[in-house]
Length: 168
Image (cartoon, rainbow, N blue to C red; front, side, top):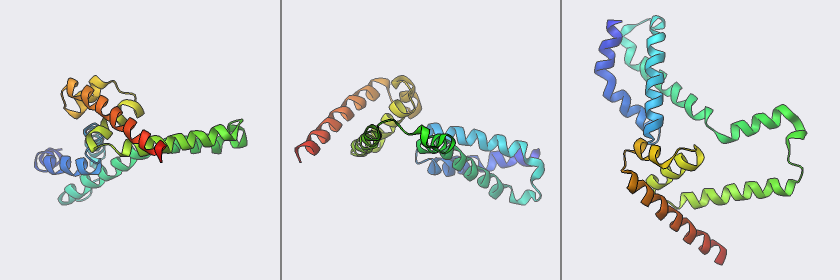
C-alpha cells in the first residue's frame, strides 16, 4: 500500500497530463478516466509483481480506461447492436427516412466541424450528451455567460455555413 501511495504522489501530475492528452482536452472525460484508473490500480495492486514497474503499470491502466471510456460512448456501437440483435425487423419501415436521417447527421457533423475547438466541445456536451449549459460551463471552467455567448455565436456561424452550402 505504501508503494501505491508513493507512486500516486510522484506520478500524479504526469498521469493527469497523460490522461488529458488521451482525452483530447476533454476535462470531464479526463477526470472520469483518472478516477477509474486510480480505482483500478488500487483494486488490482495485488496483481503487480514488480513494484519498480508501477509507473508503466498505472499508465497502462489509464490507456485501457481511456479505450473503455470512448468505446462505451460511440453512438454507432448501440446502433450496430440493435441491428445485429433484431435482424431486418430493426430497419425503419421507409428506407428513405433512414437515408435522410444519415444525411442529416452528416450535415450536422460538417456544421459542427466549422466551429472552433471550444465551441465544438460546448455543442457536443450540450446537445450530444444532453448537459445543461450551466454544467457545461462548470466542466469547461468557463463563465456561464461566456458559454451562453459562445453558444449563440456558434449557432450564428452554423447558420451562415448552412446558407453558404445551400447557395452552392
